[in-house]
Image (cartoon, rainbow, N blue to C red):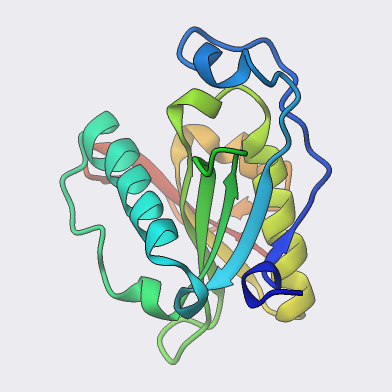
Length: 182
């Protein structure tokens, strides 16, 4: 096995939903194209993967959601990164996992996104399931926290997360902390 393949895995997920207009150019040629899931610490990411991740985060959080903030916050260096890539190497969805430290005893999941062409295909469910499986295998007995947009509480609640703060404003968007026990 090549070093670059050690962090790859398959969820057996195929994209088979009816493509949206934005996604039709991607899915029309391969309506059941499977994705390659990559779970890596920062040091194992390739320059192309880093670029794709940062571009997607900028597109989603800064451009689409109009949140002007410092995305490159140095936390990426110590984080694990989960991304799914199509056969052409395009990033479909992504999240990062911050490990516990002296100031925060929980594992924290953040920067959760699905790129526009791949939305509406259930990748959020698949990605969060894959992340939780990996986290619980590597760091058992460690609680997991998320800082999420308030309208997504039911989505994360289905994975065992419960609100652990009041709803509050961040960058003009209602957010809430949620936590899942170990």
